[in-house]
Length: 72
View (cartoon, rainbow, N blue to C red):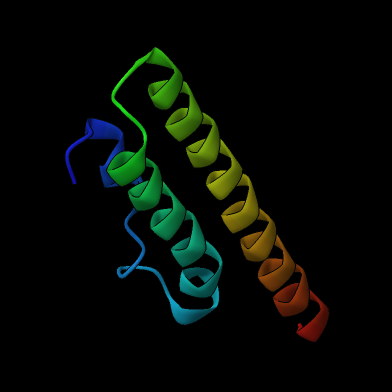
């Protein structure tokens, strides 16, 4: 991982229900770094991908929290 932002795409530390959501974003980020030349646009694409990943993980987390609250 060459770009500083790549540290935010790690997913192996997450619980399985969040890991499955986060992993595809990491794989795509790695592909972008491998195939797109370093530039401000590549940085922007990785930043926006990170934002999308964060939203997806939060949505999965919220769904889990809602399920837990319903069980209580």
